[in-house]
Amino acid sequence: MTIDSCWLVRVKMFVKSRLLSKVCFMQTRGMHLLNQKAYVDGEWVTSASNQNFNVINPANGSVIGTVPNMNVQDAQEAIEAAAKAFETWKFTTAKERAHLLRKWYNLLVENQDSIAKIMTAESGKPLPESAGEVAYGNSFVEWFSEQARNVRGEIVPSPVPSKKIFIDHHPIGVAALITPWNFPHAMITRKASAALAVGCTCVIKPAEDTPFTALALMKLAEEAGFPKGVLNLVTSDRNNAPAIGALFCESPLVAGISFTGSTQVGKILYKQCSSGIKRLGLELGGNAPFIVYNSANIDKAVEGALISKFRNCGQTCVAANRFLIQNEIFDEFVDKLTQRVKQLKLGDGSHPGVNLGPLINDAQFHKVSGMVEDAVSKGAKVLAGGKPASQLGSLFYEPTIISGVQSNMQVYNEEVFGPVISLIRFKTEEESLQIANATERGLAGYFFSEDVTQIFRVSSHLEVGMVGVNEGLISTAEAPFGGIKESGLGREGSHHGIEDYTYIKYTCIGNLK
Image 1 (tube, rainbow, N blue to C red):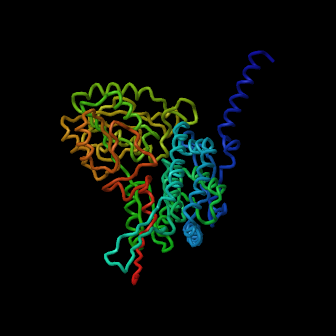
Image 2 (cartoon, rainbow, N blue to C red):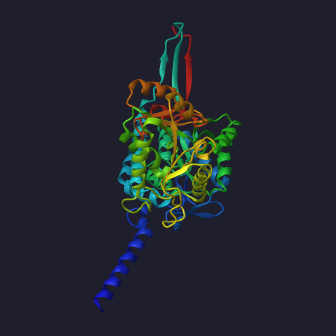
């Protein structure tokens, strides 16, 4: 065999080994976290129908694995298991619950690399970004393990000496948690750890695109020692999801619903919950403005724009959507931003150096490409990107900047949920606020200014639940996350995150001497 042929054989063997390692990466370090069954009443189970569905890697279209395609019957069994477990779990002490949450947190930290790999495979996120979400999601378990022992009641001074007035908090019961694909780890831990901390039990329905991350969390919760039935997870495809959601809303055994997802679906769940007057938490879509004023530090504004827009390829509910740039600094900001955007690397999230992965599925890809096409057809100008990156795969779309955006374009009025920056020029602060607030959504808003009086003024007038001032990344376990208007109800994270899972009981003791 010649030297050249030996070299070729070695190259082929190397390539083959790399391909096998990528296809089977979860068969090594992450194998014990790869579960292809659902988790109900402390058991790993299949669906009643014995049907499954495939979970697809959006970067290359390969099948990662299969999970049970559960239906209403399966969901009912999970609800009943949670209701039975609640009868004992609600009487555990705050210290006991805090201890279990801390054990879960420790296991999540020990296994964070494996969870991140699973997440990248099923969501398409770049691996460093998946690792960031794992750390972020873990922080909620740690936070609520500490908050469990800080839910305090009150003794209220009585108007008469013969009475004592006590106020305390009780868990509401079974909490049904419906979570999205864009943050498959953090949206579960943010909800479940708050519910568990106060004595609720949970039934979780993760998104059909990303169930393996959720199942990994259940595996580690099982290892932490949570009693059977306290945490349950059902998986289903898109066809069965509406019926399961309706069951959650209408079942008398479910005390509360927490949902993160689209405003459209949130409205449906809101209506369905009305028959039982359930406790309801909704974290819905946004249409976040990103405003850059004349006084802003341009370089910081550009960095903030990249963080707030392109995290998870723009597929976050708090992603900046409409970029409002004041007239005097418009050209400078756009030039610097365009240079940076053109440097972003698009590709398979498991590869080193990649900044953006693919969009999650065909529906999302067609939505993004359609909105850009609509804008261009109505006069918008593409400054960067603006087309699919089909050479990388069917779900890749180039990071895009479009200018000349007008009110008759979809990108002006709707949440794009993709890697598209829509530039709008404005003249005055009053005009910027008018444009920013001209939407039924009110989740997050961002603005950059070095004028302290303007900072307080604009922050006060923005009609959103969360404001980032000179900052593009605002989420943290210590802060209340949520919106106003059609962006939802309630708050998650912070000490307020427990409120949706407790009710207040007032006790009056009379005839005291």
